[in-house]
Image (cartoon, rainbow, N blue to C red; front, side):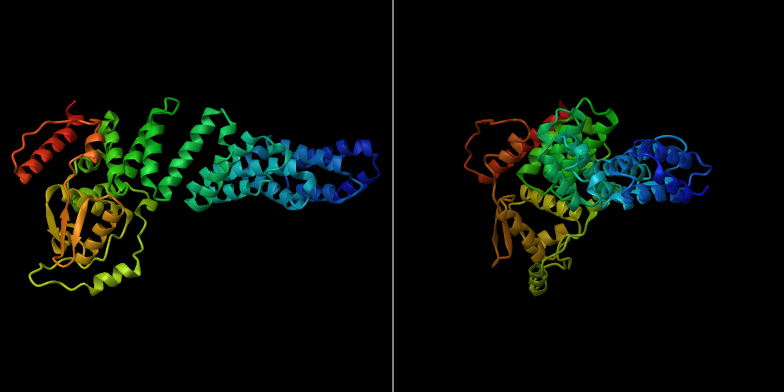
Length: 433
């Protein structure tokens, strides 16, 4: 007997027996060899569209279908499950009467997509859920779905939508005491900061998670490595100096592959291209994103004329990647610890930039309070200011307020040399203990 004939014959069955009758038909279709997704789809369309079947019976059949997906032979065939779920969702998605069954089917479909590493379709499936349905009435259930969507979107490198759902999760995170869910939320937060180039915040959160005992040791080491990477990519300045000091005091960083560049940045050594190349190979695609330059910067470099006596310098108008910018800013900050002043041309040679581009980078760091210096555009000279309080590195290195009595020799350069020696000793102390 064909499926159409079976369904037609059940129309005359008493209402109280229809549920069992239609469920028997479903079981026959599931146990067929091989099961036909088209026949199961036809059964679903029939029970949800025919008025004589009734809402209660339709829900009962859909409930049995959801159970059958977790049992053989459907359980062993992901493609068959996807076909059945997609055809069923197409039949019931416009009806508000089957939201609970639709939610169960979407969760199952998302599991299948995720097992296939189809992050985009898995996220879209979960984003289609009705979060006001009875199955997702609890705040913790909604939070769990939001965090899962964020994780999937980040795997698909869609940080914009991920941040939207992260904000939704942030409104509900207080409602749970589930430690695993809280840690997942914090990890997603760190990854979003990483993707949106908030490297200081990302490094702090990665470093915090690397100390959590509930996380596997290998994963904690990966988070520590991510913290170091973000710290290296962070904008040069006092905040990054404190972060570098905190990471260098962590004994675990010595076993990381990126420890060399971390220690050199902490000690304020000038980095050479050969030293950066190995670190660059370990970066993820979003950390190698290109940087767009403003039209004003390009015009300034084009209009800049080489002065008589200046050595030929680079024609680069600015950093090209996030790493490029981080290294240039670090080298500029390190330069301020070595020289009292430097010409635009000399700084351009050091940074591999056109003189005007080097001046622009220094000017921005001065404006943002990340570099203490003054610019003389007439003399084309940058003069670095000494930092008597040593706040950025002294306190960052864990020394606190240290009062050292020094002899007043009346020689300003001798004082500056003494401060250099004290700073180097303070920076080296974490590696000698």
